[in-house]
Length: 429
Ligand code: AMP
Ligand code: GLY
Image 1 (tube, rainbow, N blue to C red):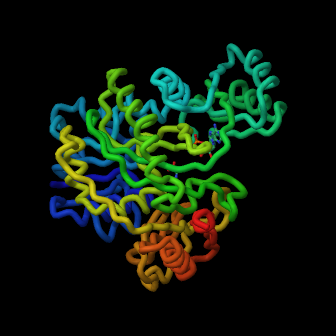
Image 2: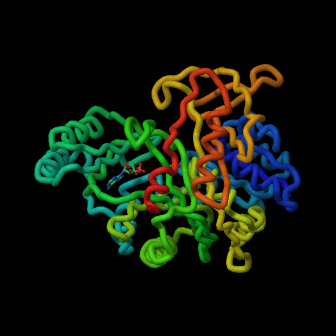
Image 3: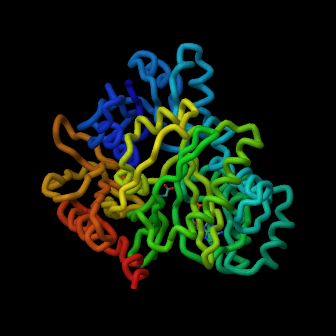
């Protein structure tokens, strides 16, 4: 079948890499893709937010399966749009419709949902400009630190962890009154700060059945030892040593099952991935957030550990027959290091020539922000540039492979964290 992947990051290159290995895939397209996806698929120069153009291409290229990488088109309703077109009725799409996408598109919706279905999460209240004074008083009395979250999509920047009541009150005013995050901040969720270790769980569901994919740990901050600004993710590891089978069973019973039951009870037919951001608080899982897509860079360690054919899994997901296919997971460890442009997550330059990706040994090189300059030269085109996944029998060796590759690849101003996975190595001792 002909398959289309929407997106242009490392996550989408990883999807393309895994899907291209399937004998079930005929033509593979990525829109818009990057220099890495161009080597294994056909890039289509269309924005995934241009639904009309997308629909035309899907019909023209006879695409039968669409995998939506990022959350934005899902929250904006791409699934509803495409399914409403009679000529595209047969097209199978991996990703929820706009109702399901609210799990990520509205923090207020997701917190309400968790409360309603008894899913463990931090206690919270939601405020708008109409009850600003109540919000300010609430913060005055709240234990610190406290977490403020813009309700809508804010490109990963909408979460503020305030250390003092004054800071929290200022942030609340900035969001509700000054429009700091635009409409996304018209409602603000104020929640209890949870202290623990974070991990990412991934569920693939057809709306009725589910498969739990390998879990991962993501390194969000720009600086070593988790310091400095938040980023899209600077590295990832799978499996996660502290997520033992006992903990994972708890996650399945207390989080995954009630989430899927809750979606059904709400009348939401959810088809696609659910990324559950969890805090492990003294061996109890609490949901920090839902995302309606796979994580980036988590996908770059999760997919390499999946031994089953991904197209078989995705087709079954879209058809509602996920119970009929098996998911086989490699016991090997995958570690990925993200190599970024100097200055990221602040301002950075683009167009730097990338060299020596061919000199990396034993890693899978996933491209993120890359493009072509002229015909053949690959240059930087974003903050996160390359995502280098090492796979080995031990965490030590996987870290070593990934880090060595990060050292090998070259472009002006490159930066990467040298401590990906080291906390987990220490955790073992
Ligand atoms: P989110 O955008 O919801 O992923 O939040 C960004 C980051 O803020 C998370 O990955 C956590 O590290 C942190 N965070 C969010 N909510 C909480 C919470 N209730 N307690 C502690 N940290 C949190
Ligand atoms: N790596 C975190 C995310 O994809 O949201």
